[in-house]
Length: 156
Image 1 (spheres, helix red, strand yellow):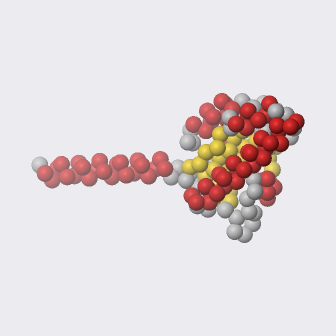
Image 2: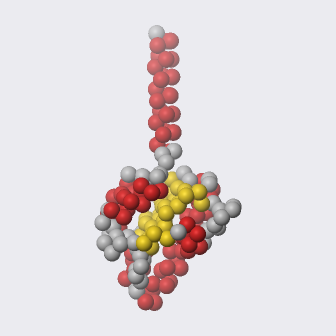
Image 3: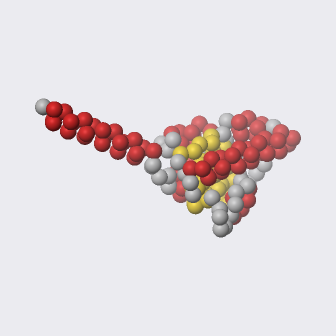
C-alpha cells in the first residue's frame, strides 16, 4: 500500500512539474503574434513594418553585435498617432527587463511629444499594454486597445 501511494505521489509530482514548466516556457512566435495583432481590428488605420535596425534605434536598443535582440517585429502608424507595437525576443530574462525599461522610456518620450500637438494620444499611450514573459517583451499601443488585449490574452 505504501508503495502504491508513493508511486501515485511521484506521478502527481511529475505532472505538476511538467505543467508548470510548459506554461512558463511557451515560445511566442513573433511573426504569428504580429499577424494576429494586425488582423484583430486594433489598428483600423493600418500600420507599417519597420526594419530591425530602425526599430532598435527607435526603442533605444543596441543593434548588431552585442544586441540583446534575438528576433523582433516593429510596426508603426504613418500618421501623427500613437499606434504601434513591438514584439521583441531577447537573449535573456535580464535583457528582457532592460528592454522593458527602454520601452517605458520611449513611452514617456512619446507622451511628452504628443502632449503638445495631439493630446488625445496621451491617454492611448497610458492605456497601452507592456508585457514580459521570459525572454519576450511585447508593447502594444492601439486605437482599439481592447481588440489588441484580446489577442494578448492567449500569450500572457
